[in-house]
Image (cartoon, rainbow, N blue to C red):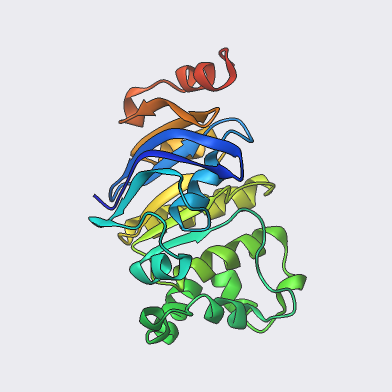
Length: 236
């Protein structure tokens, strides 16, 4: 088991957002979905060490990482690509990618890894010397995921990777995410695209009001309409 989060409680100051969330992530991609503002991003931030849990335990590759610093968690191989562009705008694509390899473990193999990223995202290879603030939305998302891969993760967490993308760009990005999964990198993906999650993931969790309200252990056995009914309250 790559990751086990057991009864996680976390939030911001006195505002508790997560109320005993438990999830498991193995080699097959795992998806999180649910209404906006119900705790999905907070969960990823807690797993990556940006927020300390107030209760519960997080095991990564069998080791307890609850409350560890983000750099130690990244060094261990758990990498979080947050929602929205986090790239420094005046950096070139190559510089931004290289910055993703800041841990000692990843830095030693940065040249090898950047070529792997360029193979996954040929458009980034074409724009390697272009400044990040000149990239399209889809290209910025590719670069953000590429920077995450530069950390050489065993588990990559993606927060809304397809948000706001045009249909063709979204389709291309989803195909690349599938390629990443095929390389053996574990994936925990938050997204509102239910069709994408059903096609990509081996397990789905619905998070509502800071709790897991649906655990789909085999998406092949659940009907699309059932997911929509649970998610939106009615069939579509």
